[in-house]
Length: 284
Image (cartoon, rainbow, N blue to C red):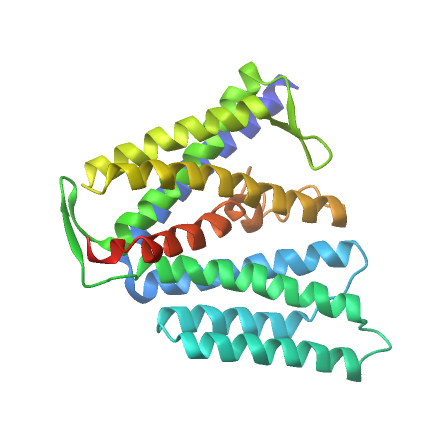
């Protein structure tokens, strides 16, 4: 038993380190490489979403979902907001058209599950692309080299989200006594959430100071990331509990599927994107 646990831990560490290195390379490369990678991840996430509901006996509009999620990612890459709205509208119409013409095997509740998944996966991953390329003309000079505003905030988003998960896990493991949401995620505790909140604020504020961003806004952003990351994690937990699956997939050894690893990021990416827009940080 001990050997197996050590093996699992080593697998998680090796996969985690390799994943971080690959992620860092792709983020810094930017361009079509980053956009293509984000779209591929979104398609894998859609497959996992559809597979989870298939496990629960619920069909989804699988092919249409693939096309819609791809379209959302491409529109984000080309910064085509009208195309994004048009694609979303057409997707809804086509899914319900499918419910009409295939009503004997594709019911209204399945159409609603499909639409929810298309928006949940497609829009959230599209914001990963939108965030990376926001204000691409604004270049920041940092101690680790020059980077665009979008690249800098993408790092803040990732590091803040990972900090929230990490601090919440360790503080919860050692000090957790009061359950945060036992019916959805029995292992999450209030103490862990508070630890994640404080840890994320410290990390995001430090990064903001390092990059010369307004400190007060970075404190607010850190707190927001911790809260929204937790909601994103619980959202996927709700889906897994409803569908009766333990992990969304097995594509990442020791870590599960794409949805398992990006559930929090899928919520924090839109948060950071609109935070930048709302507080006018584009012109920093």
